[in-house]
Amino acid sequence: MAMEWIDYLDFINNEFKFFEVKDKPYPCFAKFDIAECAGLFAIKDGAKYAANEGFTLYNKPYKFEIEIEGTEAKKTIEYNEFEAMKRFIEI
Image (cartoon, rainbow, N blue to C red):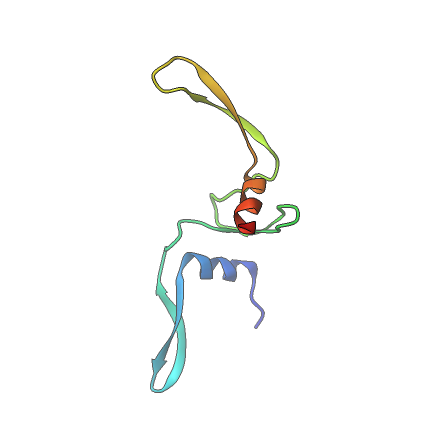
């Protein structure tokens, strides 16, 4: 039986183990909800293969404003999640 992308997410979100039952390996999930959500994306271009609801990886830069603590000033931050993920993987 071929695995679907959602099956891979199950392996990320839950702990899968083989238990011995009557001297035979018995596959099953041992712990559930280890990760709240997860996604599988292509390293080359950030294309999404599969992701749980609520998990998004933006593969283009975006900007947002944050308030500078203790002042009324705001600072604009530009962020690229895809590039940050690639740098993390290459470490």
